[in-house]
Length: 116
Image (cartoon, rainbow, N blue to C red; front, side, top):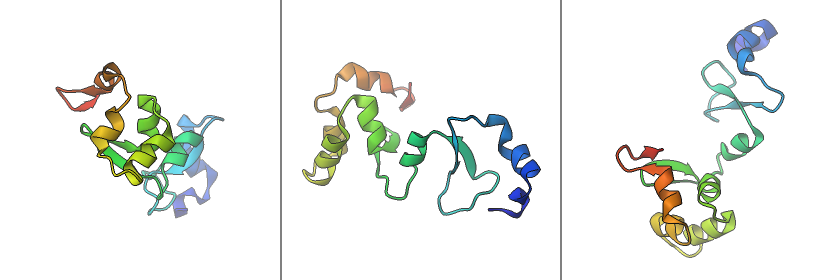
């Protein structure tokens, strides 16, 4: 923890306004410490996805964890993980097989290649 945050007043000044009972303090970059600019309030799901062991994949210009892609596309996490890790499928094939094309279209704006 940074020297500044050794007093609650300083911590609250940096982080306090966005606090909620449903959130926990998370480091954005796990290689850095608890300090201003590297912390945010996050849900338990967000924290679980921000781990060194999380696998990120890029699909149509967007990089997300396997868990996020599975959730967004309505796929089972184990199915996505297995396709990529055990079956050697491409990311494109993994994340489009069995997915309604309209869902994919809603997630990706072809003009900007970012989430719609």
